Amino acid sequence: MTTYTAQPIGAAVLEELRATDDAGRRPAPLTDEEGGSPLRCCLRRSEPGERVALVSYAPLRRWAERTGAEPGPYDETGPVFIHADVCAGPATEALPFTNAHRTVRRYSAQGHILDGRMVEAPSAFDETFTKAFAEAFADPEVALVHVRAVEYGCFLYEVRRGQGVFRQ
Image (cartoon, rainbow, N blue to C red; front, side, top):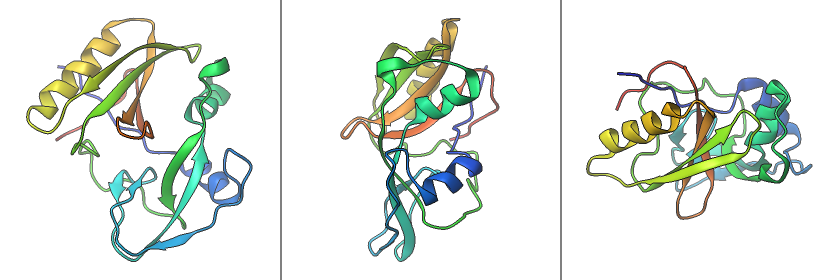
């Protein structure tokens, strides 16, 4: 069975986003008094009292810079929470943010959307999610997938073809 790795936003990109986000704004860090914000730097929810920043992030644009893709109108910019300061990244290989419905969007090597699928949670989530990734990567045109929140459409993380493992 093929397995996959949820990719957080990379350290170099996080450093840039903490200075100026992808919409050209300087972040305004805040203390998350209640906790629970989905952090894309370490793929976990914030703890009460942690300093976070809500920044604009363009995941396809960043990916295209590394690969030479040209996503055109699929180049979306949206809000993501990150730690306001450097963090250690993910502490586990567990698949993050599995407590709600998610959308798995399939993208070509050019950065164009090929398809999407909603993954329902939480009952048979691991099996359903594994099937969604297997279906996505069975198509040789799929270069990566984005996992997004259904309720807001926010980017949560990406999974690339041929990378590592996740565990539930």
